[in-house]
Length: 381
Image (cartoon, rainbow, N blue to C red):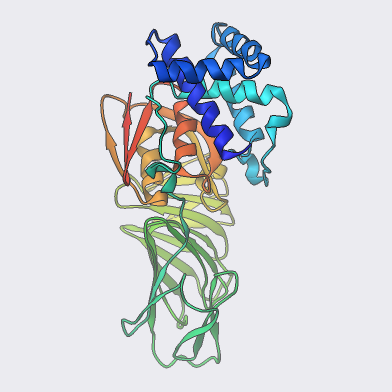
C-alpha cells in the first residue's frame, strides 16, 4: 500500500469517527468523505460492512486477537522473532476493511486535518548499535562511527571492531603486565555486543554500561554493570566469573543469564537461562529469577530477554515499566496525565517498529492514548 493511500484511508477513518461521535463535519471534510464514497461503489458497501462490525458487541479478548492478526499480517508485529514481510493488502478487499476498521477504532480521539507528510512523531526512530568505549587512559572511541578492524591495543590485547559491529578483545600472549580497565557505555537509543578476552559474549541494552579488564588475570573474572546486560559466559572452573550490579553479586561458572539493574527500576532482576548462578549466595536454576535476592520459579524467559531478540514483550506489565523501556529505546521523555499508572498490558511487537506503531498498538487495548510532541510522549486516559 502506498503511503498516500494509507494517509487517505486514515484520514477517511478519522472523518467517519468524528461523524459517528455526533460531530458535524466541516464542508471541506464532508466533501472529502462524499468524494471517497462516490469514487467507487464498493466503498459504500465497505463502509456499511465496517459499521456493522463496529456495532456488533465483541469480547475484549476477541477484539485484541483480531487486531493482532491484522497487524501481524501487515508486518507490524513479529511474534517468535520470525521475519515478517509486508503484505500488499490492496490485492484483497478484506484488508481495506481491516485497515479502515482499525483506523476508525484507534484514531477516534484525534482531529485529523491535512498534515505534513512526515509529522514529528514519525521521525522518532528506534534505537541502533551505538556505544562509546572508554579506554584505561580515558580515551573515548565512538564505536558506531569507528572503522572496522583494529581500533586499539590495550597491553597485549588487541581490540577489533568486526564488520557486524561487534567488538572483540583478542589476547596476544599469556603474560599480563598490568590490569587495564575498559568501559563500554550505550546511550538511550543504543545497544551493542561485545566479546570479552575470555570469549564470554555480552549484549548491552540501551542506557547501560559494563566495566571490565582488557585481560583477565588471577583467580577470578570480575565485571561491573549498570542498566541491562545479557551474558553468555565462557566456562572456566579455575577462574569463576562475577558480575557486580549495585549491591548484587552474581557468581558464575559458565552459563547464560540476563541482569536488569537500571537505577530507575524498583528492583534488580537476574534471570537464569542455562547453567547455574548464585545471586548474593542464593542458588538459581534455569528458569528461575532473582528479584533482588528473592528467588521466584517459572520466570518468563521470553519476556526477560525479548530486548536481545529485537522485541518488546509485555506480560501484564505496568504502563510505567513499559514507558521506561520505550523512553530508553527511542530516547524520548515520558509524561503522564490522569490516572493510568495502574494500567497493565500484555503483548509483543518488534523493537524496530517506529514509535508511532508501538503507541497505536497499545491504544488498541483501550483506556489509554498518547500524544507526541518533539521528543516527549504524554500518556493519558
